[in-house]
Length: 279
Length: 279
Image 1 (tube, rainbow over the protein chains, first blue to last red):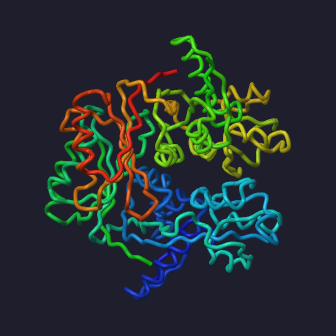
Image 2: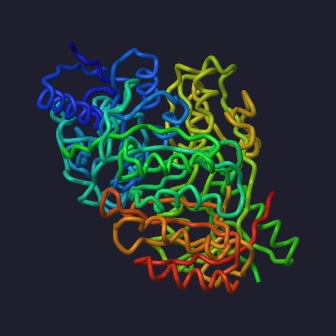
């Protein structure tokens, strides 16, 4: 059996690097083979899994510098059928790639908005005059270099070597400990593990309603490792919450907490329990 | 006396519309006159206030569809000296602006990433093949239209009339109740009011540490209207929290809660108490 794995493409994106790391992990731990299928956006990657076009999808969830990837959280909430199989943490290191002879010749820099944001200080100090233009992926940024010799792109070292383009500076990320967490999702039930992710909308906007749902976990001695709010898109001040727990949905304490949580929430979606792999 | 007010420019941005609404508010309520100073980014707007180049700055904080404006929160935390004078809530309505004869001729659409995100469904349904390119502001997007007759821009109706450009479709936002909340900040102490905003980093990452700081407000009967987490940028899984309270820092209950909060937090920054104006 061969797994099909969707990711934000084309080849050379950080999402492809994460998907490749997961392919290696499946070979090493389970002897399973798989192949990669690039999609043009994170939303389309997740919908491809939901529609059964592919078995699995690998999507970025949060970066240590730029925070949550809203598109991933909003689409997961919307789709409602995907379960997390595994979390992957990957170090992120950005390179300035260009056919210009030196960085001073560069007039415009292309990259994914998250990558641009992660190199803001470096760009301000070294290339203060350049225009910054957002692209759908770090790899798409590289496509501008052939036509424009005064253009630069921010992408990985691996992308530069894949497309045989010269690196002018590396690393250029403002913070050295730059990591991104990815989720591997599918239509299958999650396998269980020490980490559980869920999301909910609250019953109504009354005093204390934001804290009560969070307290149920503390009362059961369950640690929350992350609280992320997203707008419901209905009304300003109306939120969804995405929560990560250091616990397994099979634990009795989690079962009790979730039963109580359901009394405070309007909609409660459990994305499953899984383990984390650092690569 | 005349106030100088910084905002994300140039003329025609939603930030300028918010700044203009605040200028009117100052005239109507206090008889004060003021003039506007556009800056090229949100970060530069806030730093201009911090350095005393201008008296006040108007910046977007959160949108009802796309959520928090990370640049505003991250820069406010970094600067550390700005206080909120006032919150403003403005309805947001996007128009497709272009010199093309009809939407079908459009090959590329320019806009600020938040505006593009707020019109994703409309674009997918009506212009599925167009390239979407991010700009620093909705007004900057309009600058592409003169050179490219197959280009469109997403901006406000007001911007279209300001630059005498034709509107091809309006409104094109995916959700009709689209609002953005802005903060007016300065180096002066905040005036007081029913809303208080603060941010903190937690003491250490141990069980329950994310919930305890939030509980102190519930224990004092203070309602939290918003919880937003941002990465500290040091380590994946290490967060700052931005909290909005429906209370005034002068209230005895808030004083007690803040004293207890300080025992759980590493750094605690209070951005002040203020009122909200809907325009």
